[in-house]
Length: 148
Image (cartoon, rainbow, N blue to C red):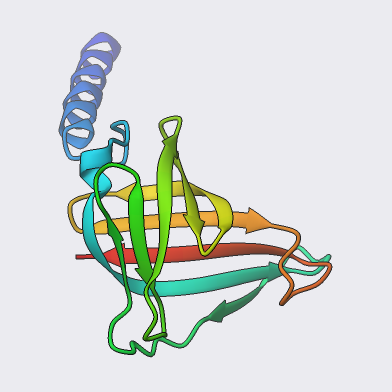
């Protein structure tokens, strides 16, 4: 009886692992390539988590006011255009760092971003800094979510 129960459990575990491993979204586990990020993305959200010496951060979402639109556009090689809550479009460049990060240089400021998700419809990045002039002395985690 115990041997049959063990066999059935092993078979069910194998079936579930095959089913759920086949359901993972592309872009989460596969390496990031230039063609996955290229094109125009709408900036859907920009959020801060501010840590000021306590384990619980203060969260803030930057108000979303497109003027005329909030977007980032990657040319598929190395150039980008960025506009958030401004009529001005800032130029810059980008490069992928390893399999999980992207370096963005916008308006002469370079920041390395961890890629949290990159699919055909969602591109989420996050960066941590301890020298944000808006939050002196704090560690700031900045999240940007792009959609198309």
